[in-house]
Length: 516
Image 1 (cartoon, helix red, strand yellow):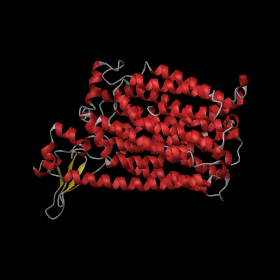
Image 2 (tube, rainbow, N blue to C red):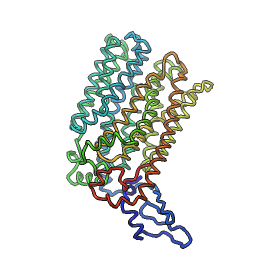
Image 3 (cartoon, rainbow, N blue to C red):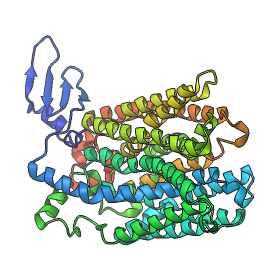
Image 4 (cartoon, rainbow, N blue to C red):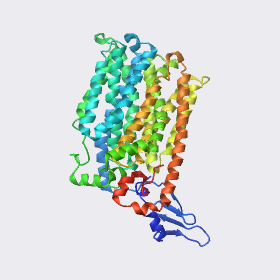
């Protein structure tokens, strides 16, 4: 939905004063008025919003937006590529005899995966609070540098306790990057611009999943036993070294804010600030952080988003961690399994961008989420059905990627669009992602060696969670739609139109229309 359509505090007053263009009027029929993109039916005064495409921006603003895109999105996409590879490359390491070299049992391997997410969940909210009270240009590169160092050290692990501790430490530092990066990106863009940018950023993860498999294939082919190190050890060393290099590089490229961006002219900084001046998060950014933190922990929208993200991220991470094993279970050898694990991620990256563009232009999130969830449900239905052929099962894996990956940026953007205040957005964003990573941690137990080669239990659990996610989206859409209807007909908005009240009420203010 366009930002213009979300601010209608004077709509009812204009209606009562007949200060609205009449499209047609008949004494024996309803009177329909239209102002911008809001329609009112006269008899019942039932107000409904028509979610039209966003209005065209000026050439100067368009050039500014392009300049911001070029400076911000590719850098964070590159950082997230290595961040995501740091998480999932242990799945490829398993195929390169990690378990045998460290003398791990199947349960110990799953515990190693879970230890990462325990730390990830514990430190996400504190990390975002640290980000708000520090310089992004220092905090974000620092945690990425720590991740690279820990990854290199992982190659030296010789037993279960060592690699368990290293994965926990990796989760501790990784916890701050994704929610912090999402929050940072939202400080540069309007709500109707965010989903596409977040999707560009998150699509790096899907490319990373593909690249991780291709890199592991290459390392296993050319570096196995080189200098007495196994292929999985070389994979960790190379991945960690590249992560450190990108982190050091980003120290000099991440601006702390619009006001300190040296690559913007004075006029561009002023325009970038003014174009966001009507955004709820920017209107409320000076209100007390304590108030917004308390509001975040009391907001039903955040808890619904947490449950939804849990149901999305559990299947997504189990799919990302075990796609090589799933493909291997279809009858391919370990090397080609890593190679064939790439297409679902690449297709998921493309579908994420397509859904983001369509969602931003339509101005709605919920209907697109439902469509994507139904597509991924179809893919898992192919995987869980034993009677279908191997090509159809592999097609099912690709369909899962197409439907599942767009759900991540769209669900995150949906929540952020419906929160007002920088602090509340940061806390809500971190809470949602933390809940999702609880699901990601649990998902490491979905696929066990005993269930190979069909992994029917893992596929069934993922399928069930996606069905629950679809139900949650439908309920949330209905609740937000009803809340919008109530807001548009409430009379008390006249008493709280001043700026202080707008900041206090945040998205509860009648002028703030929820994104559906």
